[in-house]
Image (cartoon, rainbow, N blue to C red; front, top):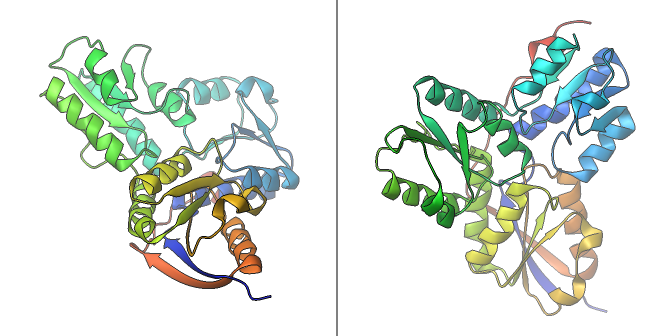
Length: 316
């Protein structure tokens, strides 16, 4: 039986970013240096496949530092942590390694700098997301106010409208964030913004590739986890850019084949914490059912690399 023809558009860049790569490497190097178990506070990155793989190698994932023993190393996730967490680890004389993405650390430094200059902070982000919790936790309670939508900007209560700055979560939708920034600048004309956009290069690049790919596609799949902010934003960006069916899947077994009946063109991308092995698994699933012709939609080339902390590069 002949398979139906399908043009499969593959977004580039897609999948792992430099911060995720570094975070995973940190856990693997910590296991090599100190042996198992190594404790990790929160999922190192938001991907079940990655977390399960590291668990098999000897990583123990916990939600809070209180669940860790004093005598084993602990790693803080790529999303960043409130200042109180490393302080608590130091007080217990624990070995700890901070795997916070350097681009998130940049936002933390920015927030502290604004606070030192007497400015109250407004953070554009998602309530409860670990990165938002970590960034807001860099400053005392009440010093960082959260806004999630343009509507929130109208009601946010500030101490002094003339002494404000804003930062953003690094994994937001570029377009949505631009609208919120505009609303902030209209309401608070003197608000100070970041020197350079807080939304990270990888988030921006993956969204741009989806915008270029979406109009060509009958359907689009984003490989990523349901708790991954940047993956969920890619689905929204795809739908907004003209793709009638955009869905998030964790892996090939999640694909709803009935919903894809009759398609002739398919777009595939992946969030920044999804490994290439899962993307290849999805491509193979399509190749099993269709006569696939793969076309790359490349909008940027990434060659960013972040060093791991010195403690892991030194001999044990």
